[in-house]
Amino acid sequence: MNVKKQQITVTFLGTGTSHGVPMIASKDPVCLSKDMKDKRLRSSILVSWGDVSYTVDCGLDFRQQMLRENVTSLQGVFFTHEHADHIGGLDDLRPFCYQIGEMPIYLNERTLTSLEKRYEYIFTKENKYPGAPTVLPVLVNNSSFNLAGLKVTPINVLHGTLPIMAYRFGDLAYLTDVKYVSYEERKKLQNLDVLIVNALRIETHPTHFNLEEALQFVKEINPKKAYFTHISHKLGFHKEISKILPKNVFLAFDGLKITL
Image (cartoon, rainbow, N blue to C red; front, side, top):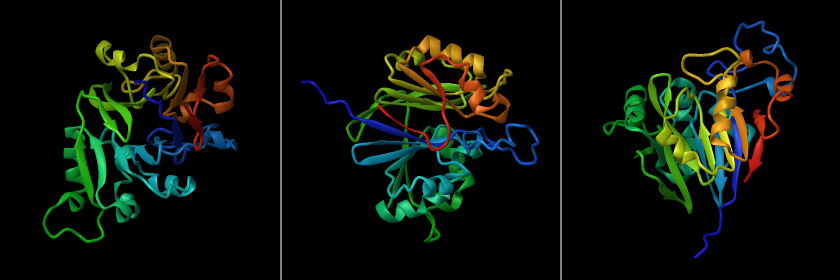
């Protein structure tokens, strides 16, 4: 029996690095740019299919991103790792928790342990503050699973030496803060329609792909299209870098929507 392919819509909530662009106190020309495509909140996406929507990460700009995109319902959050620019908006899940009760959060065990320490008031079982969000942790491992009719595949990657998570939703894959992907995990990225991956800057970096590494990774994975995210001001102007990219590779920008 043929299974109908789910249409997926991706909204780039933020495409910036941990500092965001512009970076505080910076006089770099990119930070002073008037082009709105050079204004980047912390990286996150909203993935929607059917009648459900999930974010990958909820960082320090989460509230602003939800308001900007007029997101009125959310069914869960996928976390890549525990750094502040990816988890700092956890408390702002409260309005969505009022709607659905427990908010499912998909993450690995180390990220859960970190959240439990940093947000003790959310995870405590005793004398919990009544206004705190209520979350339902769902641990992910190497196994794919079905979520609202879509196949989701966790992908184990390295952020420098830190093991973190990436995710494939149907024929879309989202990898951020990546420096290395093993051969075995790359096999999970075959036959993609869209690959989203980080391209931090021109110069090499110890924990992120730079532009050259990101382009090489796209060449090896060979998706139909690729979008770069988690971009710092040190990559350069959106307009200028876009001119030198292959025809199927694009710089993402805040608010960009794509459908596949």
